[in-house]
Length: 379
Figure 1 (cartoon, rainbow, N blue to C red):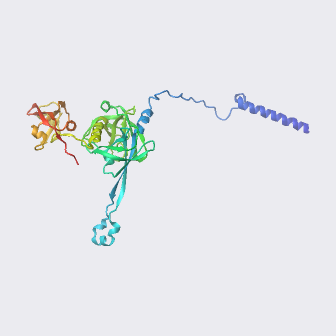
Figure 2: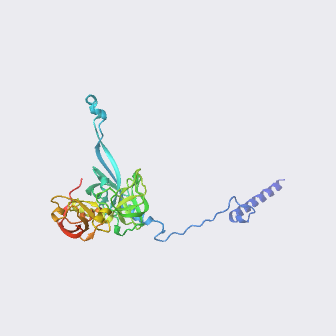
Figure 3: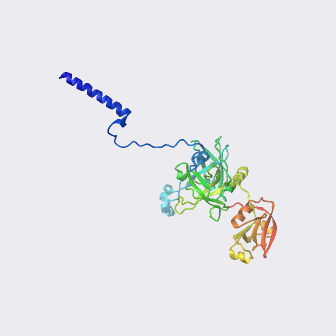
């Protein structure tokens, strides 16, 4: 009996060993299949440079290190309690309910424009701030000083002591076309640096009511609070605009954002760095857009140009001979379409130099030489 059980145990061990070897090396020889089928998947090979045509990872990789988060703070006084208007209440509880200062903070974005520390952002991001701090993608943080700002274009220049900064490359914003793909880089809602994608929806947007001088690039790339001062780039990561504002009824992005073209920002930035402020040309006139009815009264086919509604006494235009009722159609030989374009052309003139202003008076086109003045600082 013992011999029989020994033979049985040895036989069972050999059979189990054979079964284990076959199930491991050649499971297809077994009469049963494992639960579920073996799925064969196909994996893509590593992509060659420059990567997928539908990806903007390279552009984001280039632009993101040049965009900083800006944190500002200022001291404000808490409003006094309404009961402080009661003399009796103020007598007994005045010290407790007097207004007290506190620190208010806000955030935005900025773009590094030079390796030695200059940063371009929006005026409204740093307006009235006592302290400004910038934070880079690589984790570095530093205080920044305000070199100067221009409320009329909503631009400002900061300077930090950090060295060897990753400056962004300026693109050709004057060559941007409607339908071009663009990327918006910034710090929306303070969640951290983010990149959104969209297209250019319109160019030379004005009459938006945001700034005095408006020539916006309109985009549907998602721009939200905190993105202000951030970069709008092309698909190569080159800077083409400074994100400034959104059209919104709720405070969030509705697909209409506005950016200041980089060719405009560059001119303002250079003046601020050189002198701390911006000097613009000025004629001393008030203007209004030409309507179709007014154009017909002037005997014109199209409603282009700016109607001079008023002339400041002893101003540059008054001394040059421009009169109310004149139709201003060109500045330095370049035709203007509307009041916004006229304002931008005049602002670009060099003060104290003589400019040729073309007007239509009594249905006749005449050229008026005007010595350009300096535009007064606006509140």
